[in-house]
Image (cartoon, rainbow, N blue to C red; front, top):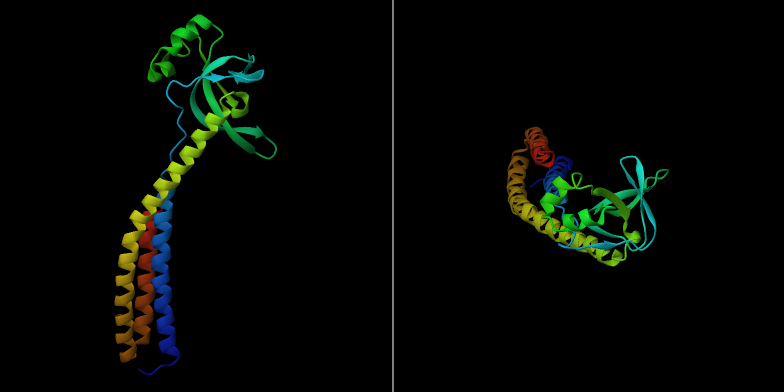
Length: 213
């Protein structure tokens, strides 16, 4: 085979084409993996104890929680701690009532009923940072467990998606090599260039459909 500038350019174009295939496949797999998130879960039956006097906002009013107050957590969220630089930390959403009798009845409800009957029973939904509660370590552990589960799920999804890309990519590379070799022998460089550009476009936009689906 006569090696000249056109031949070298043809094989460089093939390498770019193969790289586009693998990079596009990688991005699709990585993007799919990012969609799988395990959110922190409050342990069933968990109660929290306030360890310092805390003021919480409820319907534009301030609700004061004294040290030692027991509340019922139901979810974990991000809360804004500095409006200037938009820094945030984890907080916990919880139920609280100043009416102890109602609150004791509320505790015995099933979780779905708590959400629907809270206002009816005079129970408020409030939010505060982890550092307000004696159970801060347990709350932080739920974050760690959720992050670990998210990484495991993401890794599993990524390889489930990317493994076929590797297999097809190798086939694509072999087929591309023989096709390029054939056209180089015939010195059909213009046709080879056009085919490579079209294939790269099809690969890029084909993977793009999955990426933005």
